[in-house]
Amino acid sequence: MIKGKLKIGDEAYALQLLSNVHGEDPRRPIRELVENAKDAEATSIRVVINKRAADSYIMCRDDGRGMSLEALAKLPHDICHSIKRIEKKATGGVHGIGLLSFKTIGNRLRIVSRRVESPDTNAIEFQGLGSFEQIPVERPLDAPGTEVYIYGIDKEKKLLNAERLAEYLGQEFEDDLWENKFKLDIQQNGMRISVTRERIAVGTPMISGRRISTEWGDIVVNINYGGKMGVALTRRGITINRNLGNLPELEDDIWRSGKIGGSIRFDSINVSTDKKNPIRDSLFSTFIARMIELEPEIAEAIKKQEEVENEKSRERLHRYLARRLDEVLKDLRFGRIKALMQATKRAEQEEEAQIAEGVAFGGEGSTSAREKTGKQPVSRGHTKKSLRSIYGITFEHERFLEHAGHRSRFEAKFGTVYINTAHPDYARKVLKKRNDLEELDYYYKCAVKEIVLHEFEGAPPMDVLEKLLDIQLAIEKNPPSI
Image 1 (tube, helix red, strand yellow):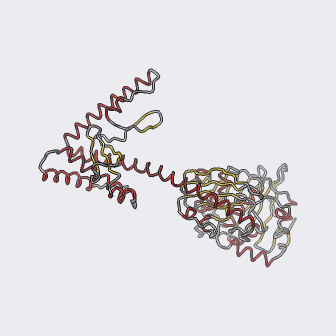
Image 2: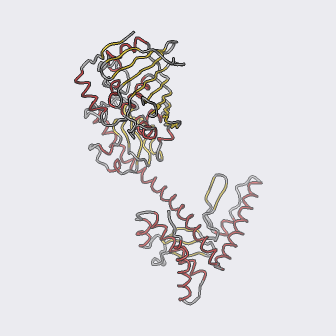
C-alpha cells in the first residue's frame, strides 16, 4: 500500500504560486483538471458537479491515456518538478502545481485512473497538502482514462455551477473547442451542458484561420464581427489575455471598440507565473508588430460589415412598419389605399403566375409584373417576396435634387414611399440615430404624411390634418417598438 507525506520540491514557491495563480477565481482549479485531461490526449471530457451529496464534490472524467500505479505513486514527489515541463512537452501548464490547486476550493483530492492497454484501475487520495495514500477502488473504470474528484467544495459558491463553469471553460479553452480537439460536457442535477463551438462562436467571421508566420512559429488569427469579450490571446489552447484591447501596446481603438471578438493563438509566446499575461520579450514585440499590421484590414472589414448590418436593420424596420400600417389602415377603411392594395394584389398574382410559368418551361421567370408594379422582390431561397405591406406600402431611398426640402414623396403607381436621403432630418434621425426607434419614428411619420395626402388629395386642409391625426393617434395607441 502506497502512502506518505506530500513531498513538495520548493514549498514556499508552491504556496506562493497557489495564492497568486489559483486564489482569484474558484473555477480555476477546474480549468486545471480539464487542462490535465487535454494534455493526456483526451477526446472527451466531462465535469460533474454534485452539491447534494453529503460530501459535496466536483469530478472531471476523461478518456485520455490514463496513469499506471507507478505514475500515480510518483505524483506526490513531482510537485513543482513538473515532468511535462522537464520533458518540454507542448502542454498548457508551465509550473507543475496544478495538482495542488484543489486546496483552494476543497479539502481532499482523489485520482482514479486506468492506463491504456491495462485492465487495472488504481486510485490515490490526498488529504489536503499533508498526506497521501493509495485507496481501494470501489468501482473499476470500464475504459482507459482518469477520474479526478475534489471533495468538500463550498455548496454556496455560485460560480461553481454548470452554467458558470460552461461559460468560463468555454472562454478558457475556446481555441481547442473551436478546433474540435475534444468534447466538453458539464453536468449538474440531471442537467447537461455541451460546451460546443456553436455555443462559444459569436459574431460574423471576418478573418478565419489566418496563419501569420514568425521565426518562433505561426500566429493563428480568428476575428469575428461582434462578440462580448473582445479578441483573446491564447497559448496552446489556453486563454492568456481575454481582451487584447487591454494591452497598452495596441493603441488603435478597434481592439476596444466592442465590435470585434474571437481569438489569436500564439503557442510560442512566453507567459507570466499566473498565466494571465504575456512576458514583454522579443516574441511579444513580434506579436504586437503583426497585430498592428492587421489593423487596417480589420477596420475595413468592420466598415463593410456595418454597411451590411445597417441594410439588414433597415429592411427589418421597413417590414415592421408596414405591418403596423396594415393594422391601422384596415380599421380606418381608407378607400383609395384599399384600391391600391387590390391593384397590388392582382399585380402580385400576375407576377407569381408568370414566374411559375417560367419555371414550368425551364426559364428564369418573367419580370413584366415587377416592371408593372415597380416592386423590388427580395430573394428567399428559390422564392421571391416583396417588402410591400398588404396595403401596398413599401419604402425606398433616393436623393431629391429637385425638391431638396421635401422629406419624402409617394409614388401611388408603385405604392412606394421614397425617403429623401439629402434632407438634413434624414442625416439627423437616421444616419446619426442613437437607436432603431429614432429611425422607425422617422419612417413612420413620413409614411403617415404621404398616405393621408394620397387618400385625401384636394380635401380642405382641416380635413387633411384631422385624418393625419387619426392615423397618428391610432398608431401611437400601440406605438411601434423594437
